[in-house]
Image (cartoon, rainbow, N blue to C red; front, side, top):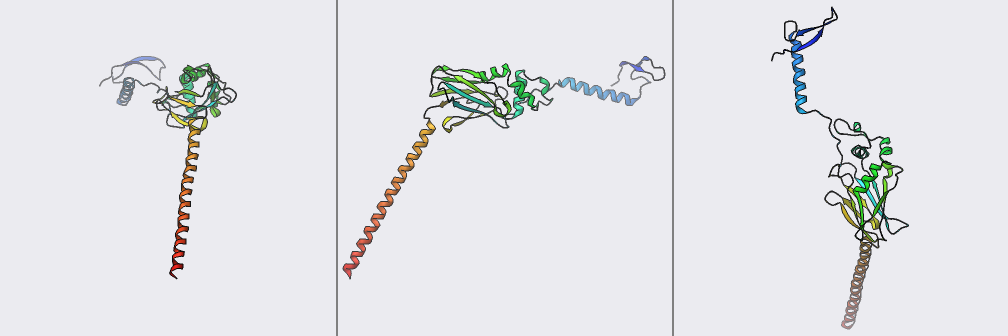
Length: 260
């Protein structure tokens, strides 16, 4: 391909600009080859649409957690303490919410957590609104009103959301969808009263939690009762066997005495 581009070329001797035809006798072949390579690379770049990569979530790192409990002083308040898993997820969430600048995301989509990120995201109204959208509590057919408590150390201890229900509750349907809007592969490990545990996911984002005596407590008691019943049965069988053995020995002793 022959290049016929016109560009200003500075002449060192005179220090002024003149127009010279590229590809003419004044331009050597190495210059033409260099310009051709640059042109090809530029065309490839434009054709590929080179842009900065979007933020990439990391759902396969440390899982986020949710600790669910009934308020110690009020039977109508459910508390959910949410804590991010990987700290870089907190940075990516802040960027997605518009709390942190997009420049915090690298060209390959990665982000690196900085302590200032938690200080910016924690008190943000956008962050509070996000938690109230992604975490829901319903009891006795009514949705409970949530309030996000200002986090003291968001990166270390997470943030608590208090849900006030219309009346004292024994059970509640609790929904957790945090971070699944960034990537559906995220999971939330949840713990609750009575030692209950479960995993929230995109496929299963709502669970029924008990705050009364609880199924777990009933199962533990049933387990102990079954163990006691089994021990009684085993003990009874052993006792019958021992008595039978004594009787057999006495009968044999008497037979021996008669035979003598």
